[in-house]
Image (cartoon, rainbow, N blue to C red; front, side, top):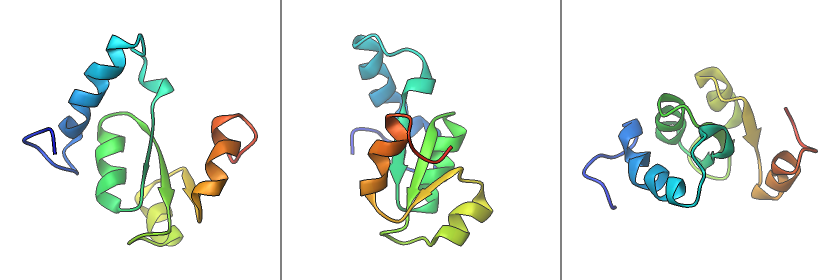
Length: 89
């Protein structure tokens, strides 16, 4: 809502990335975007952000996989294991 662009345009992340820079987070490898739609995946991919597809919304695991998502979860409860190094690679 804070940009004139919308997903799947990767520029949608620019305000957030600038804000993160203010906190010293300048490397995109420290940013993980979680979404439940293919437009979420395409925007994150094109912005060079790591992405987790969650199948609680519009898209099933097979569709995320076909699009190229590396991380696909059926629940957000799986997210801490990935973030803290004990999850799916």
